[in-house]
Length: 114
Image (cartoon, rainbow, N blue to C red):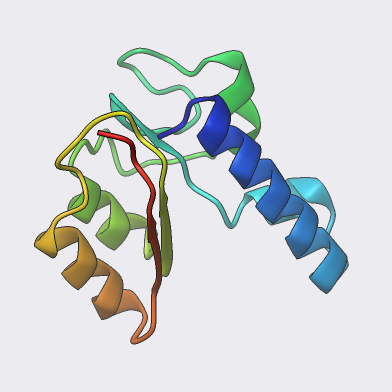
């Protein structure tokens, strides 16, 4: 989820990337993609736009809107997934297989609350 918990965790990850790599926050944020109830969060998203707290993570994207989590994982080549959504049934076998295709040892934290 890309609510306050998801964005807060993302900001902590950005801080860790900066500390470990010496990257600036804007560069570190490029390594993190957010997903909300409307799908992949990206700059100038036609449906639903992007709220203020998500804007720093709304990257340029020309791949169109994507709503299914496994398709998003494939499209952005995700190697880790932090699930803090209030929507159930988003972590499924297809999502995990998509992660394994990108990384033989993906990081998966399914911490959603439903």
